[in-house]
Amino acid sequence: MSSADFYREIILDYYRNPRNFGRMEKFDIDARDTNPLCGDEIDMQIRVGEGQKIEEIKFTGKGCAISQASASMLTELAKGKELKWVRSLTKEDIFKMLGNPDLGPSRVKCALLGMKVLKVGVYGYLGGHYEDTDMPNSP
Ligand code: FES
Image (cartoon, rainbow, N blue to C red; front, side, top):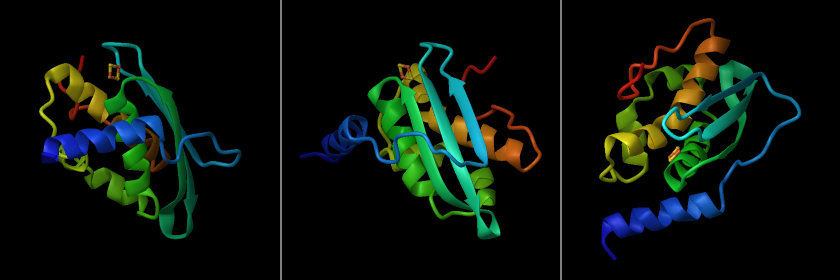
């Protein structure tokens, strides 16, 4: 199995069995966004713990395998991290997490949707505003 196949299998597994999928009753951050190209959406909720750490994080959404798998993997990566880590997160980190797949521009939006939702939520909580410069072809 090539490494591309290996990562494709992982993405499909996260799509079929999304980790951290669902809604929380108690949360501090709730953010959602839509991929304007297809209307697919992701909603993320975060409970913030001591030291401004991401104590719990869950997501819901509907969309393609890449968008849902990427959001699910990102929740696993984010759990336990300090909120400020979210500020340093880049699109390259997301591509690396996904195994650097060969994505066209429209699929890049799919892959980055979860990160955008996470950043919008965390920046808002910290009193800022996320400028969507990481997303290609942003209006
Ligand atoms: Fe809609 Fe990928 S096709 S997020």
